[in-house]
Length: 364
Image 1 (tube, rainbow, N blue to C red):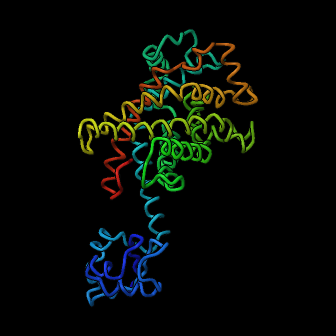
Image 2: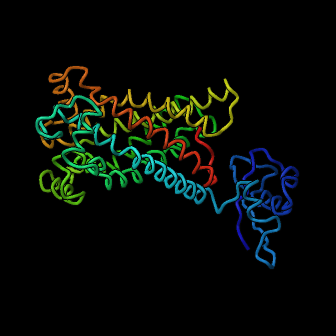
Image 3: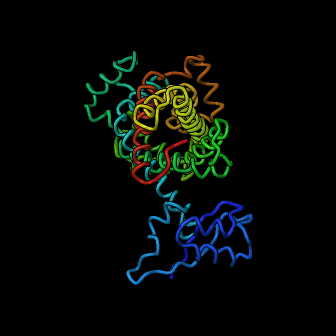
């Protein structure tokens, strides 16, 4: 005997339930056990299904699940869905990160060029993205453009998986999972991004330290040991405030913009779900998220590398304005977009395809 959860809409009568699928007697028994003539406040009706000698159900487990949302219970179903969401998101962000890691290295070096660190080879000026990349390759070798790839990949799976994987549960918590709205998506995206950044801050800190020239030796383990020796265990969470702020802003702007552009594009063009729709929406989402997160990204990077130089993000922000003016808040915007733009596009195209393969709904 197996216990099945058959999902019925509120107000469904026993007679109507009997016509939903061949397990009419089971459905009616479920409603009777609840002492209702129709489904009341609970969305769920529980029933005991009889198995055949071959071990299958009367209508087939897969077919019933597809039609009636069968599972072992609401908690189990949500846990399975979250694991799928997390895994799909992590793999998608990992693919995008490995592809764009060289641009991320150049961006970090540009942002640190005036921070008093040896971010660029001695005597070379940070004239731009191309010049910086050429200087790095000439003095440190081609593989230097993949500095910190281990931490980047770990960060991608854990942080990227959490950032996008928490999105659907947050939408459910906010109450916009069934009726998405731009404002609701912003709130859910902010919450999922901020929570992921707090949990995964050590991987981001290690990645940035490895990508700066001073921290490129010894690997992730050496960086972690150095941080703990100098700042204690909690030093791994240095820069959490700007990192979480940036993650909240980026996730909200990426997901809300992406979903809104998708909806409006479908309405105006009649396009269905597909690579062309995902490309168009993700490219615009990348442009928006790069612009709105640039100031926080610059402050976060400087705090990660500066150690005890700054007392907090406000101190870092004021010092940055004093030294470089408002333009300093957008330092590295071009390489940042060259990384975040393609990364956003690759991430969303990959995640939509992997969600389809995993049996998940498209992002909305």
